[in-house]
Length: 254
Image 1 (spheres, one colour):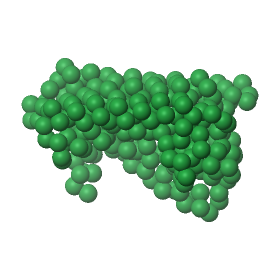
Image 2: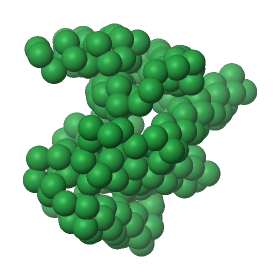
Image 3: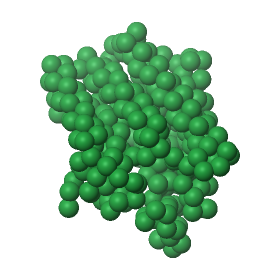
């Protein structure tokens, strides 16, 4: 509760946006149990649950990081960019799930095609906004933070941006599965394919460098060289998983 209070002080806009998405995720989990909707062999509600959780965590993460930077109109603009773009994304994903329709890769009608393109644009704008915050950490070095922690934020954002745009590898194919159609047997909830390559795995791993690298640097590594080494290993892991998927090999084969 103390951490949440500090987060609210640091960035109230992203605090409330993150909170609303996490509450939404809990609501969607309940709906998925009470009123499941099947889509491509899975519960259609799982996708919005995952996105709501992801957006909530992302919002709180960036809310915390921006608290280290000097306040100003650019931070306010960043907040509104994140809220508006990702709110559009989660609303459309929930709307389509409720109708038993796919949100991603759905170009079956001109309207769906336009909305899917708008969702991709919104995600791209949000990613560029986060890249801008990464740039801010290069031109501003908070004096009260260890250098290894500042670098962990910089490197975490850099890897996040790279693997966020890796999403275009899926968008261009209109599929996240390599070696066959989407909908093969997957891991529970995550739905990552257990028999074919799945581009979502590298996307997930790479984007969560945003949280994992700073947490490791702050609590465990506590050294700039170790932080760089861990960032290199983490990036290598994400690339290996991506190459594995492109070769139509599953992340986990059961």
